[in-house]
Length: 300
Image (cartoon, rainbow, N blue to C red; front, side, top):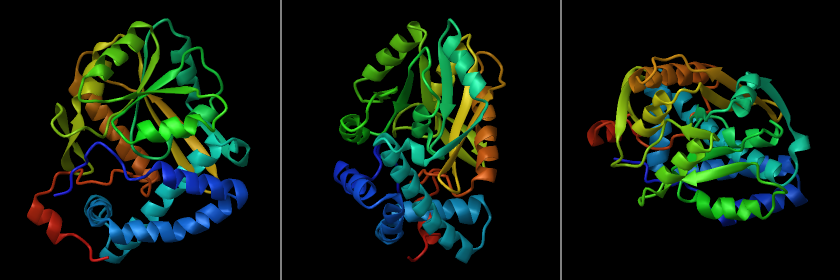
């Protein structure tokens, strides 16, 4: 049974190839190459392909053929978001347009004399938001569980003019806990992704798209206990290199982590109803049994 192992597929060398293409051949050529790269991953990554197929077939209730097609399209759109992130990081942000929906909520958090909490998800492309939101009084620190981002972020830092977002990588030594507490004590802004956790860590459960799923407990326990507004924030890709930022104030009972989780789940369900192709969790998210998971695996 496929489980997420704390890192996503993708290497520094892969980023270098696409940066070379983008700079010397243009973004459209990189998108064209992505047609074949997406097909490669669709065929060569059976567990990841099965996970996304499961999402379309059983969570979105689509037919077999449509689920297969949308699984490939999901790979392609995910690849587009990576290319866009690389292009924007390399200084081509003028090639994109951006729409703000609720940005004032984030700006207010940045001005408040308290910690600010944002909770996002592995949907869309939140990391590109820093290039369009302008300068805040506070830096946003993204808490990530992806170990491979250490090398990738180090490389990208060398080609970008000025980093505007800090990263806190969740590790086995719990150093991330002290770093999160430091940012909160300094009344900084923390952004969690509330839909992914490292196996063995504490989780909470909620019904998501009609089936019970596990979520990391940390973001919801921490956020529900602080006396500061919590925002759900997503940056979704639309046609024509256009990105749409959504920021909404979370409504929940103070010190009730489960009510915050429930509000979060409803928020993701709503955003995915608008952008069903942009669910980017490539593992057995709903923890199906090995038999159930294998029986439903498409033959690519």
